[in-house]
Image (cartoon, rainbow, N blue to C red):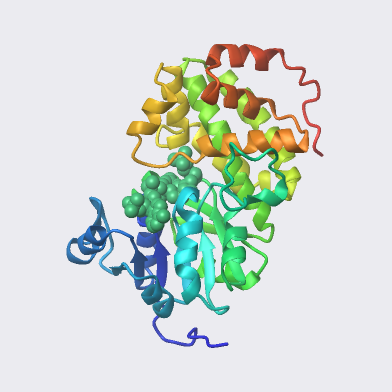
Amino acid sequence: MDSKSSSKTKTVGVIGVGSFGTAIANMLASKNPVMVYARKPEVVEEINLQHTAQGKALNENIVASLDPEELCKTCDILFFMVPSSGFQEVVRNFAPFLFPYHLIIHGTKGLCLNLKEGETLDTVQKIGRNQLLTMSEVILHETVAVRVGCLAGPNLSKELTLGQPAATVIASKYNEVILEGQSLLRSEKFQVYGNSDIIGVEISGVLKNIIAIASGALAGLGLGENAKGLLISRGMVEMIHLGNALGGSIKSVMGLAGIGDLVATCNSVHSRNFTVGYRLAKGDTLEQIMGDMEEVAEGINTVRVMKAFLETAELRAPITENLYRVLFEDLEIEEALQFLMKYPFNVDVDFV
Ligand SMILES: NC(=O)C1=CN([C@@H]2O[C@H](COP(=O)(O)OP(=O)(O)OC[C@H]3O[C@@H](n4cnc5c(N)ncnc54)[C@H](OP(=O)(O)O)[C@@H]3O)[C@@H](O)[C@H]2O)C=CC1
Ligand SMILES: O=C(CO)COP(=O)(O)O
């Protein structure tokens, strides 16, 4: 197995230069040279000539390439920062050039479906756990990489870009992935925690988006902090039960990637998922919102996927189920809220 980890300069790769990829690339570039991958030639040219990516300022330590092979040859460590909708495609483009010595960390808070050729969520009868893939599972399925990790936590990219203090979790079964991620990213303004429960951390980041959409809807209706406190605590319980059903540990939901990110996104107008809920409550349709949102709100797809999983697993998750009906079946938000207020949640804490 060839490894270049002894080389003096450690160029780190970042795949995807959207909001989050750009923020993380800038943080990495304060310590090491960075090579970013973008699929559009004009984006690569803009980065290399002007040190900006679609108008966002980039550290001069960052160069861009259109070529997955160049990134894989130059970088032992790669951060995949693309939305779940394009994740499998991007990983497949990189797969021929990846070796077991590569260390991969992703920052994607979504799920992929593991279906047969030609099948879609609309055509399959059941979505069991085997048909759902977290992004680390996609990487393990599609490549020979072994040392895989994820990065999740309250990391609103707009705040990171402003240099505001924050923290994240690097989760991996491999301690060296956690240590490498910590050494690359940790700074006076950015704390990096470790967690060995990668599935629990990934699922926490995925599921909090559902609750963030609901929180935006409450805000859009003009409801107060009591309602938000109710939503966040019941949302956390729902995340714990769903996370458990998907193979994550309760402890991870209780940590920074779960409750930490839940609080951040449920309270921030910078959250795209919060914004989706807010705009729905103000009367925009889902089609309008998806039509003019330039950035991804992963929670919309996650609600669809989780609804199918809940039916297959015969589980109940009232916030997710009602949000599905609001997003995809024209249930009014006020009606969903009434339904939730009547739901017989009897026990406050039933997970410890
Ligand atoms: N923004 C945030 O605050 C945070 C985001 N995240 C997560 O990070 C992930 C990315 O989000 P974010 O950066 O905000 O998304 P954006 O919509 O801002 O950017 C997505 C980036 O991915 C690229 N991309 C999409 N599909 C492909 C593809 N098939 N091949 C190559 N490149 C592709 C896009 O390139 P192109 O311009 O060519 O389309 C774009 O550069 C999401 O899962 C999100 O949940 C996590 C924490 C914080
Ligand atoms: O996950 C995030 C912050 O931690 C970003 O949330 P949004 O995708 O809702 O903007």
